[in-house]
Length: 401
Ligand code: HSE
Image 1 (cartoon, helix red, strand yellow):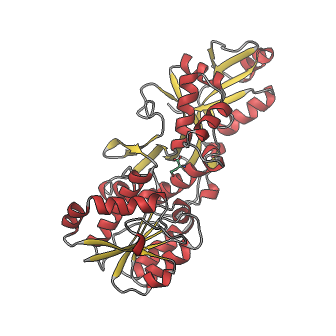
Image 2: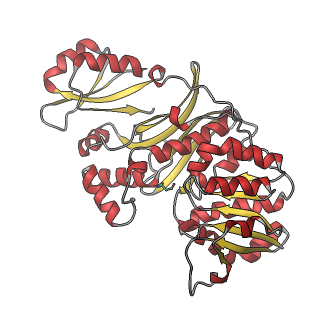
Image 3: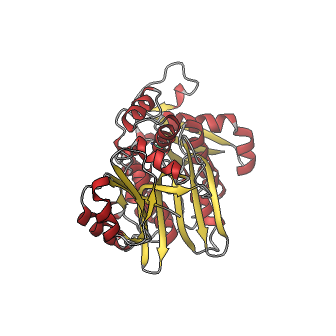
């Protein structure tokens, strides 16, 4: 019998128990041994819950029980999740987590402790919810040099952008509606400012490079400045507006960023709508591959946690290889990265635009008093310098071709 414990009986934690209970027979077959959730750690009591007798309030009960070999950390936040995870790994108990903050901040340390103690720290659910992406990078795509990852990694912002597009609505109105329907958090900052997607691309970038990509070093721009008019322009250009989290190898170095982009109709991420997430990976041998599905939610996220539990159970006493060193990865300055830009300025500066930017493509205006255009490929630095000379930029959106 394999005994597991679940830390945090909230949405994901209760989902983990539900996935294990619902699919117990097939999971046990896949492991080759019966799986059992022995403890659930939570501050609260759950009277009437089928698992109420498994609830404990003291982590040491779990830590000191030699029968427990796998721990699902579904608490979120840094403490006490970090201390619990560290202490469990030091005792040779594997930890499976959905906690992206912890993975982004302490991934290399926890992976090293797991290795030193012949167990595992696995985090499939920390990026893309139920979408398999960590395991593909760590095992299926190991023959590849991954050149780039471009992801829609946040369901809340993808839902908001999709609704703004479909309903020709403003950001604030759609956000309010999303909050009322429970799709967006009451405090939506981490989602709408791109911080959530930033942590997720930091994790993926670190796995791609095998070094630590600090999320603090990733240029991050959210969706709060996107207006209804931007979708009208995007429509004219046959493009969609998406919050992309990306990392790329270029001739000049490796960079990672999060920002809203216009993407063309033929792009694989163009049709990824609503709360769905997708991760588009380019490898130097395989070429393109894409991973699509539900990036959040109780059962999808729990399913990913349980897939890690199964992996741990299949590798008792062994550490599954994962390359993510503590050494910091040097990132290219975003100012040196190159792309096209869609730009809206007051009509009064049209002549200045034509003088300053070479080879622009005009876009039919959808707002009175505005002049809209697309620049040729240029560095961010050069774009910023030129637009500063013109003055009065209404909005600009990067273009991913
Ligand atoms: N707030 C996140 C999202 C949840 O909207 O995608 C999953 O990390």
